[in-house]
Image 1: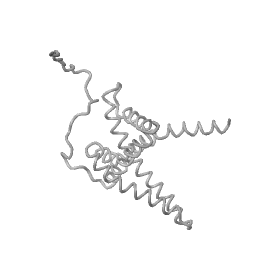
Image 2: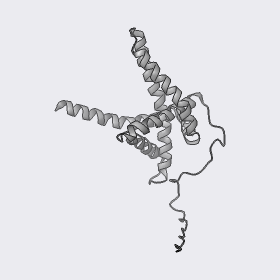
Image 3: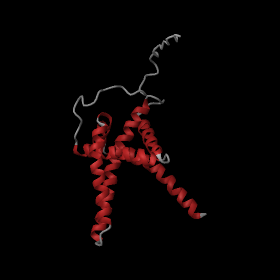
Image 4: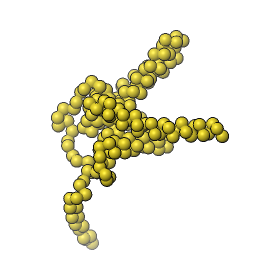
Length: 188
């Protein structure tokens, strides 16, 4: 029974610490996470395209060097894995900021920190959905986040006008009057 409690408490601690990490990265590295956020917002396809070879390189490098007989190469594999996860976490912080911004119009009160925490929690919970979250959302979001993080670390901002600027559906002001929707009568 003690092992069950231990595993349960470890899982709860991880679930609480992931949003905290994403918020901390946004607070500690605001310029880098802003660049990653802008890339994910304006050019998600390019982030995914850059993230794919970078992710494959990190995974391949770690798998190859972890199988080596030399302790130095195995240590290098561990360090490479930590660096890769760190870069991915920077991209995840940008993705959490993007999700939080899009959630901002749906909630009250509307503060940037609350939106960031909400975005981080939504990102984490989407990753936990069985099968769709594990095998579809995590690889796609993680690869795009990796590419956005590389763009952010290199300070490569998207060109102005790289993507059409359309307001997100969630960002409507509740104080504005709602548009009148007129339904056409069905004709026989």
